[in-house]
Length: 387
Image 1 (cartoon, helix red, strand yellow):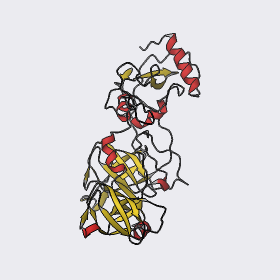
Image 2 (tube, helix red, strand yellow):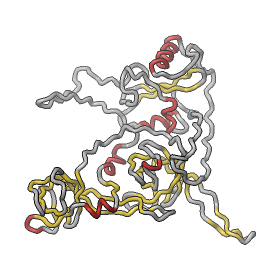
Image 3 (cartoon, helix red, strand yellow):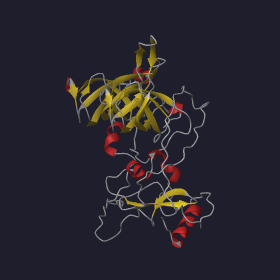
Image 4 (cartoon, one colour):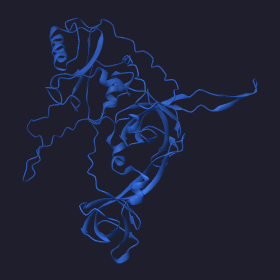
């Protein structure tokens, strides 16, 4: 039995009011029995549909884990996915039950030390933070970092990420997807000072085909994989591997640049793309796409052939297909075709669900996703769709 006193009911009513949740009967008592989680339905194969005509996916009822806690204290090293799995059968349904008073703080940020609690209103589960939660600690001894000429206060407690930062941070700034025209028209490195075959940080290099004098900073990149759609054969994009950063120090033809930071050796023929300031954003949230989407895994970053947890995969669907960072997709292992010797015919076995992936970076026609769960071995060309 879960007994809640009147103060909890008042808290729930206030929470419902400030979050503009249309709840009725806030003063009612919570359900007397713990609901049993429903088995997750298995998605059936379907043809690919573009977002413009794709049907909306019916919302799935939120099922709780049978061993969910009433309260959980957030610890350093936790991720939002980890916490969601403690409460929910399907972690990507977290937005359906997560509510917090936005007047207290950013409703999406959770910090170590926060107490995550589950309540019921009219038999429906809601997850929130007890108290103000996550307020930066101002007790004596908390470190304050002062920078001149401005003052910057940095809390020792960072908000927890959705997924492990170390799993995706190498890919957020290390690669980008470009078009064939981008590669064919990009400036290129002709040589370096004293004609070194390999250049590095603080080297002086010379480049040609720089036409825009207003651009003074560049990424040095090297062409990588060519991504093609496995069904149509169309080129979806070209991988541009990040090599270094450089700044223009003398305009002309060739243009002279100074290498500011090198992450790999720089070779003659490497290309230059205009510098883009990228903020590594880890504040996306797990959720299922609201429209139907289906595609295939076309590559695994890092040169792997078999896919396991926290491997990064490339999908043949992107922004034009409605994918966004935080979208969770189910991966299905391709069923083999075998010979039925009794009926003298070939039979394709059903695709089997193998795991879950979460999209974290989206380009026009392709996306990067992180493998969150791997129940079975996943491979190239395995199919993904709504979970």
